[in-house]
Structures are given as structure tokens and as C-alpha cells.
Length: 341
Image (cartoon, rainbow, N blue to C red; front, side, top):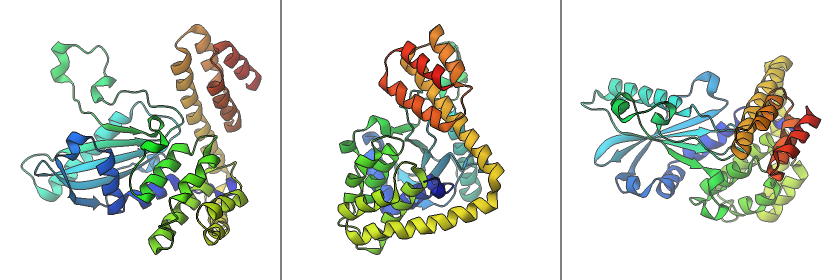
């Protein structure tokens, strides 16, 4: 279903969800740490329309900024969504840049006596578990107590969807559906999970808002899956919600075809080839990190990693990711890499 590879579909679904005040409150009251939630007045929550992501990173990140009363003072909650297939060990630096932008904007707009508190949050749904620490100071080497006072530091709240079971995901109907979809979008069992996702819409789907939410999910799936056939998705939606909503799948699919054709004409074939190679390189980096995480830093592992770095075909990397999950032997995995490279 590469016909539906509409750019920034992750960003669209993220913004559709977390730019809705009801969904935002639902997410924060379920996932803010208890000690932070007790100090935050969610009834004061305001959605700020600003985005702080640089143009060249919009394909990989989305963000939302909320203003709220925190411990009786005006503050902010900043939510950064990383929609790459692997975690970024330097995300702390990006967060710091965005926090500074928010402070500078607040100074310019409000002329405060003190800087407002900003609570940074990261939502991650990559193929592998997040393994980096959440403290900014973890980026520095050779830390000593004597030099701690010279290190800038903050900690972000991490929501790694890989670490939650489906039953632990809570919130409003749409928030829960989107989080489940983000969690399983890279998983081979995605199709088995979809009936549970769409069944959440049984009570919501007759409202105009419910229809818009349902359409957003269908568009996202058609834009981000290669193995899910349109007729299969139609059948899933028909059985989980109702037949009329199943028919929406075909209508949305045709709209996406038109958008895809238009987008393809505007961008040209060369850009498509370049993006495909860049995405494969990023996927390869994620696989390398997962190999080191599973097998350690042995000489055999380093040989395997050097071979993976020369692979740029997404289908080959997908096969190797599956093989990595199936084997506990570096020798078996090395043989698989050798055969595919």
C-alpha cells in the first residue's frame, strides 16, 4: 500500500489528538507523575498553537505546548512526540533548544520577573525499547562531584509505549485508540490488534467528532502500513464498529490515492528515492542499537554491525529485525546477515 505514503501522517494524527483539550487533559491526568499532577491545575490548561520543531526535523518529530497553573504559578507542559522507528540518544539537546525557545518567547510576550517552569515530556513508540537515560547530565562523560556544579541539567518524563501493556493504556476513547495504534504500528501483530482499537469507537462513532476521529485513524493506517489490504481493513472496521463505517475505508482510500498522486507529482521521483535511502539508514541505525543491546560489545557483534551498516534495503532490514527477535545466538544472526548482505 505504498500508494498511501502521505508525508507527516504521524504528525497529523498526533495533532488531531493532542490539540483537542479534552484529549490533552485525559492524557495528562493519566500519565503525568502523581507528584506533578497534584501540583498542576488541569482546569487551567490552555493549548498554545506554537511549534518549535525545525523544518528539517518535522518528518521525525511533532510537539504540543500547553500553558497551565503549576504550584500556583503560570507554567508550561511541553510534549514532544518522536515518530522515528528508533530512539534518538541526543533528544536531550533538542529538548534543551526547545525549552530555551519557549522561555525566550515567554520573556518577549509576558516580561516576567522569573522564568516559568516547563515540564518536558517525550512520547516514543519506536521498534525497540528506549535505553537512554532521561537526565541531560547523562550525556556528559567523566562526571565527578567536584564538577557537578558546572553541568546544566534537567530530566524529561518519558512515555515509551513499548513498556506498557495494552491494558495499562488509559484515557479518552480517541487518546487510548491512538496510543494503541502508535504502540503497534511497527509490530507484526498489528492486524490482530486492530479489532480492539476500532471497537472503542462503537459508542462514539455516531457523533460528528467520532466520525472525524475514526477517519483520522483510517487515514493513518492506510498511510503507514504495507501489509494491510484495504478490503481487510474494511472488514475489520465493519465488524468492530458497523458496516457503514467499513464503507468509509474505501472512500478514504480513494482520497488518499488522489493526494498521493498529487504529492508524487510535486516532489518528483528523485526526492522519493533519497527519502527512501534516508529512512533505510535510520532503520539500520535502530537495528545496530538493538543488536548491541541484545548481544553486547563482543568482536562478533562488531563484525555483524559493520555488515548491517552497508545494507540500505528496507525489506532486508525488516527481515533482519524479525530474525533478531527470533534468535538468541549471535552466530545464527551473523549467518542471516551474511546471507542478506
